[in-house]
Length: 311
Image (tube, rainbow, N blue to C red):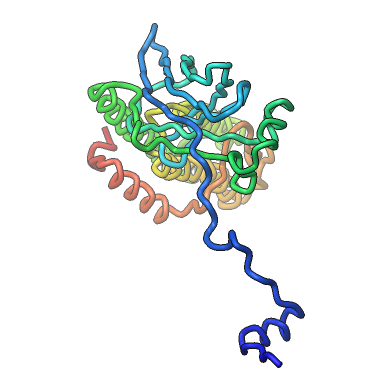
């Protein structure tokens, strides 16, 4: 009688059966590399980027759809499909006019999803499982060695400088709004502003908050939403989050501090002055100490001299 080894006996006790190792067991096989790119060319026509991708995929069936992504690190910048013709050669020019700004170190990544292919391509793939191993699909390739830039060295350097100036100006402007608001609030409590017939006038105060505080913040928030879509801002996504926190914190303070103003004056807060409209007030904190720390982090990251923020 043959005796089972201790590991097999434990497997039987724990799992109830013993599975025999298959011949193809071991580490997972890498996905096949079907695409060979020979060149990636970039040019600018009438201030719009155009990308030309040249290569071949001789092992794939005709009409295979290859999904390409332009990436900067893990960020997807732009996506486009390529459909193979009978020659299996790739030579396609892609219009990138939606991309604004300049950025270096971009790369392409391809992905082939068998289940998303035309039916005739699916049938061709299924006929040759060794050539097209479904267990490794979707088949992805990253073309690390063919990185490319949208813009020359001077354009990329200019984009970096413009991003720094964008942050400096928005920090300066929103902090100026914050200081002006606090000065206005102090004047309201002292009775030197926002008065009518010797009493605090909520309507005058609300008009001030809208025109001098919230409308400028709305404009800044709109500019931020537009600029974060550009190529130039992509490397500054963390710093943009800092800026969003700073701007939204000041926006929310304008509502919280307005509520406390009514309380200090012994009045009931006016609902019209406490309902945010078309303005983002989502932030982690409205404390001035936290606001100051976020400003310091952003200035340190962008190498901005804080002394220039008062200019």
